[in-house]
Length: 249
Image (cartoon, rainbow, N blue to C red; front, side, top):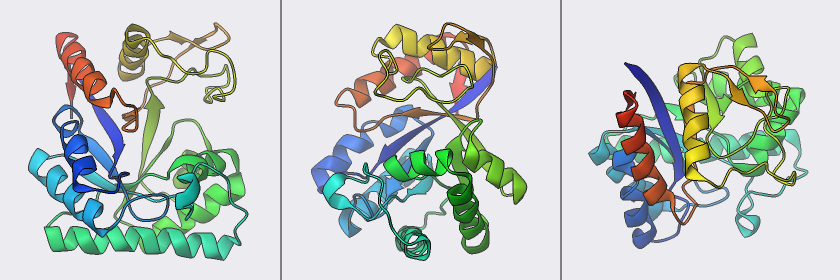
């Protein structure tokens, strides 16, 4: 039987009600990335998200981003490198401390939003971020875009990495994600998303945005938690993967 890890960015709201919504997604995924105060999240949402993830029995990781709540971490910031690294370290440590209080052990780190994209497009930034993680958080795997800069830096420093794929984004011929501004870069039909998930899980060929066949496998697939239909999509994906003989774990 094939298996696949499904990860989802959660804890990005501000209230207990937001966390309750997130909790309804958790039975259908295997890993969550909890916002830890940079782009979103607060002590209440972090604690509740940790408790809910523990109850659901899923892996938990830190989801740090640019310290820019106003723009939800979706805008690139020109921060001095040391200031950025210090912020990332503080965010992860904040969640790590709360996790220890809740009896939860963090498993990984996944960067958020613009920082995720910037790191994957900039070898120097990726190198600095991986060095920091390897030094300060050696037990946390890095969840990073397959075939991109963070994966390569992690391999350089021999730090464990989980190769991430996307169900709702088209890939370019070079195996990189097509920018959202490109027409057709976002896949909106569930059946097409499922086709891509099955291919990435099985290591089978699938079409790029340029209609070339790509073939590579991933360790984890992202399900966007900020999609208003995230719970519905998670349920459908869980059902369809089960029918295809694929276990989420």
